[in-house]
Length: 379
Image (cartoon, rainbow, N blue to C red; front, side, top):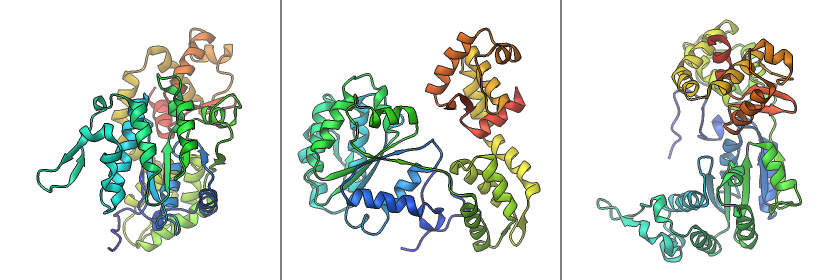
């Protein structure tokens, strides 16, 4: 089947194909080497740096796509072991559904606790996964069955669990130990544990008191080099009958510190603004930024309307600073008319938990660059 060409080659929020994926050659080779040699990997990097796309790119590599079953499980929105088990089970079945294998047919035979979710589509006669969270009565039993099923796979499996640090937030207190035991006993699967909360992930895998201590090779993810990304951007413009002034890509990369998603979003808008056979110039950047921020404005307003007043004030103050330091100092508190240092500390704790701000040492900034610019100009 021929590749379906997107209208805009600067893809945002999903992996399409190698053609629209920039670089990461060394990182991809590193993942292949670790997995091929039986090592699990903990991929730790900030959100929007391109972790998920890298994993999907790794999945299609020669020697991976042919030799393994691959599964990508996003647990960012999960809050309990039941939701984790539901998400894992559904992803495994959805990936196997198009395949004609004996292993697929064994899914509901071996995972008996999920048979309630086994339905036949009235139109096609094909089995479907029709299961609600409430149907998982004993998540540990279902988890045992899922891992037993994986161990019977017709070929090895690679299971990537995105935002893995989320398991540390579950109401159940033994989830890390439980999963570590199951994973250690699983002979037919390698795991990629991907996470964006670096402090939590590092603690999970580097602290000797934690179940996952030294259970995976730690891998970081730095921004794609500016020269490499600029060459990539110029190529995509040229291949589609448009032209790009190199300074545009360089400026965008620097404005957003090389964070892949934000850079891609801006380049997507600049590409859309550039007519065929014309050149994208630096004087288009300001308008592109306004367009992108305007497209997100309603969600920003909703978010702000739901924030407690103290968190709102501190978030606005950090946005106005750009990168904020000494946020409990009397100077900062007085400048932004905040009640006290304790108010700042309480607000920051919740803003960090909700991923609205990020922390590097003693420096804070609003995580979403576009949201930060909107806040700085609107309030």
